[in-house]
Length: 134
Image 1: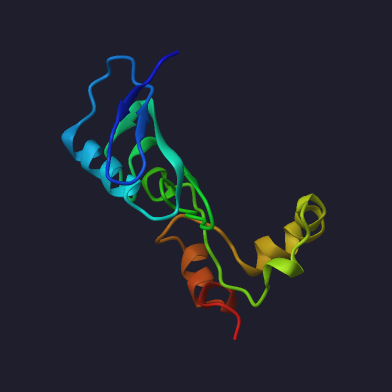
Image 2: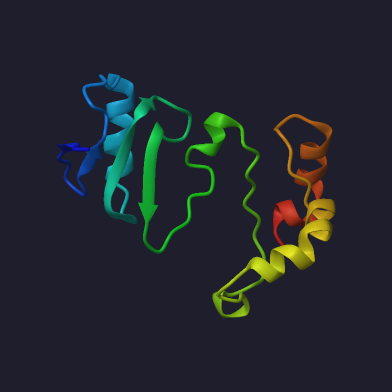
């Protein structure tokens, strides 16, 4: 399948949209994201592209040296949460499979993940995990 390339000042936007029109608001969001200094090689756009909260829905944002956990998550309400810890990269193993298996229940209990406005979300914001470790 071929794509259309939209040139920007930073990285190109590769749109696999097959003739699907892209809203002007979505195009503006895509150009704004493509201008971020940590975008890796190009910004990809899929046929379901449309304006969203945070970033354009249908965009694939590969980064180098950065993590953007809620780039599209704020639009779809998937409940992602970023929490500051005192861990350094050297403290974390290359494969996190074992960490997730061992810590699943304690993590969910200590840092509940829920949609904004729910009782669990309000409790999470008050926890030390939400504010970062002190």
